[in-house]
Length: 389
Ligand SMILES: Cc1ncc(COP(=O)(O)O)c(C=O)c1O
Image (cartoon, rainbow, N blue to C red):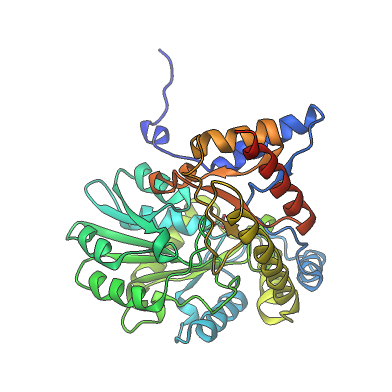
């Protein structure tokens, strides 16, 4: 007899950014020049004082197992940071540390949802949400994000989708892939509607430090919501630390122990030297973050109007993160075909919006975590390509 796979694995999705990157690298290996706008990670070094703190910790022998929930010093620093930035009181005992923000997505869904439960999540949205929901056998309920609302959701639509079976509502602001920021008024209506259901809230705020016009409000700061909200933040985007695999969340009291158990069953703990680098990131000088956001703003201010001016493109200005999400439905090919051909024929790697859900199907996602020079060249290549259509 042949050994078989667990059928749940077949329900796992993936992140197409990694597949597109692999295809782009294969083209480069054959001598082609490719501009990479597919990957969602800052193109800056981890700030030197943060890296040094990690290296010093390795030298000091911080290379062993440590507390599953996270080092107390990092839980305290993260609680202080969340409290100050969201204007709330976060108890360090409710803060957990994990290997990036991603495990919190998976573990929260594993800990709260099963077959028969519904999970409302943003569409277009980070693909791991739907993937994890399907994996546990729960029912994904996409919440459309509306371009005409700056890629926020329509609160009336959210109210329609909520019910007694809603176990979890996932929100993400600033948002991947649209760069949208959910305004406070929408969060207030969402909070009022969610409070009438038995749903937890997972507020994915990993781009919280990367905003351009105003700070992104957090649903956790609305009265009563912190007690049902997993308030998720991390180091990957804010401090250009994607490879350190470090994230944290403030979670409701009832979830502290279950989430800790999921960690002890999987990764045991986050390397202590990475956690100590995280303390340096939160408590040390913030000028590297400010400089990174200023550079992202410069790029956004070039890229968005440049895309918007291309024939067949319409691109609204994102308020956060580092993604442009132009609508290309006026072109004579689908966004999927366009993304495919831009890579193969024009040497520009972007993602099709469909990688983020059906409501993104008319869009492309371009990450502007790439130099201004690259962005200028990419726009020229795209302009030349669409002129030939
Ligand atoms: C919305 C969103 N949440 C979570 C993550 C994962 O972040 P981390 O590297 O901290 O696991 C990403 C990364 O792209 C993201 O875009």
